Amino acid sequence: MTDATLSQLTSGAYEQALKVIESVEPRIAAATRQELLDQRGSLKLIASENYASPAVLLTMGTWFSDKYAEGTVGHRFYAACQNVDTVESLAAEHARELFGAPYAYVQPHSGIDANLVAFWSILANRVETPTLKRLDAKNVNELAEADWEALRHEFGNQRLLGMSLDAGGHLTHGFRPNISGKMFHQQQYGTDPETGLLDYDAVAAKAREFKPLVLVAGYSAYPRRVNFAKMREIADEVGAVLMVDMAHFAGLVAGKVFTGEEDPVPYAHITTTTTHKSLRGPRGGMVLAQEEFAADVDRGCPMVLGGPLSHVMAAKAVAFAEARTTEFQDYSQKVADNAKSLAEGFLTRGAELVTGGTDNHIVLLDVSSYGLTGRQAESALLDAGVVTNRNSVPSDPNGAWYTSGIRLGTPALTTRGFGHDEFDTVAELIVDVLSNTEAGTTKAGGPSKASYVLGDGVADRVTKRSGEMLDKHPLYPGLVLG
Ligand code: DSN
Image (cartoon, rainbow, N blue to C red; front, side, top):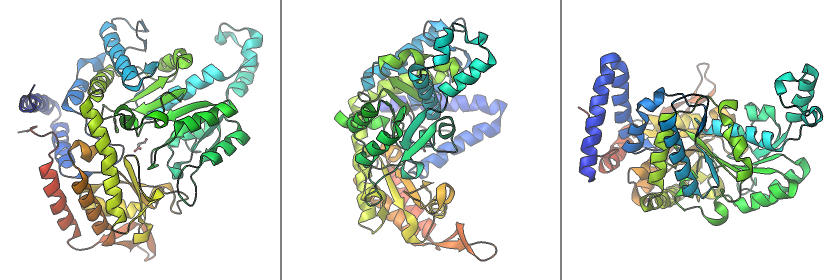
C-alpha cells in the first residue's frame, strides 16, 4: 500500500472514530484531538516515549478489549478464547523470533508488571521451601497457620542486588520505597563516582559479599551500554539468577544495534521489557525467559497479573512484525547516532553530561551548572515547547523529586525523521533556554527549588525555531482531522 493511501485510510478511520466518541462524550473526543495537536507541536524528548504506527494504534481500538482470557494459550480459565489464542500465540512467536528467545510471555500490562512476574517466577523456581518438602503438601490450602508462618519466612527475605535509582536504575530494581525494596532484602550498586560508568569489579565485589538470589541489570537513565556477558559471569559466580530489565533499550536490541555481549537475551535467565519505548509498540510489557523458567512465568496471570489485555497483545504482534524489518533496524541505528549528535551538541556548548556522553538513546544533562534544579529546568523547557523529564544524577543532592538532571531521549523525534542537524539544533535550543532561566524564590523570599524565571522572548524564539523543524518532519504525515 502506498503512503498516500495509508494516510487517507488512517485519516478516515480516526475521523469516523472521533465522531462516534463525540456522540457520547465530546470532551474526550476534544482531548484526543488536542493531544495530537500538542504532540505534533512540541519537541518530545522523553527518553521512554515514542510514536507507535497507526497500525499499532488502530489495533488497540477493537472488541478484543471486551474479552477475558486469564490463563495461557489453550489453557484458559474462560471459555471462547480461540481468537485470543491466535493473537497471543502470534505475538509470542514474533517476540521469540525477534529477540532469539526460547520463550516469550506477552501478557504483562506494563514494565513493572513484567518485573513482578519475573520476581514471582524466580522465587517460585529457585526458593527451597523445607516446610513444603517436609509436609509433602499437594494442597497448600490445607496447611496449618504455623506452617504458613514458616513458609513466609522461607519464601520471603530473599536477596536482590540492583542498580540504584540515582545511578540510573529503576524503582523496581530494589529501590526502598518500591515493593521490590520491601519484599526483598536488597542492596544496590552504583556507578564509579569519577566516570559515572558501571564498575563491573565493584558489582562483582558486592555480589560476592551479599550473595543475592537475583542480580538485576538494566536501567532507565544510564546513558551507556552494558556488557551482559560480564553481568552473567558475576551472577554465575555467586549462584544468582540474572534478570535484565531492557525496557529502555529493547528497540536497540530488536534493531540489532546492541549485539553480542550487549544483547541481554542470550545471557539473562529472564529478560523483561516494556513494548512502547524504543521498541515503538503499544503501551505494555513482556517477559522473555530461558526454558527452565517458562512454566513459572506462564503462571504470571492469574498469580500476579489480572486478565491479559487482548487488544494490546494484538497490537504487540503488529509492532513486533514491524520491528522485524530492515526499516526498523535503520531506525534503531539512527536513534543511537542521533543521541551522539545530541550529546556532541551539548558538549560543544559547554553543557555537562553524566558520563560525558552517550552510546545508547539517552543523554543525561546535569543542569546544576546553570544554577537550576531538574524541576526548574523541566518547567522552563516545557514553557518553550520542549518536553523532557527531570531525573536524578548520581548522588543527587536534590533528591528524586527536584533532582539535578534532565533526561533526554532520541526515539520519538527520530521516528519523526530528525537527524544529526536537527538534534544539534535541539541541543542549541535547550542550552538557550537553560542559560536564560534563573532560579526563583519562595513566597518568603528564600531560594526555591521549583520556581524559576524564564527570560523575555526566549520561549518565542525557541518555539519558532523548533516549529520550523517540526513542520518539516510532521507527526503522522497525512493524518488530517477535520
Ligand atoms: N516511566 C519509565 C521511564 O520513563 O523510564 C520507567 O518506568
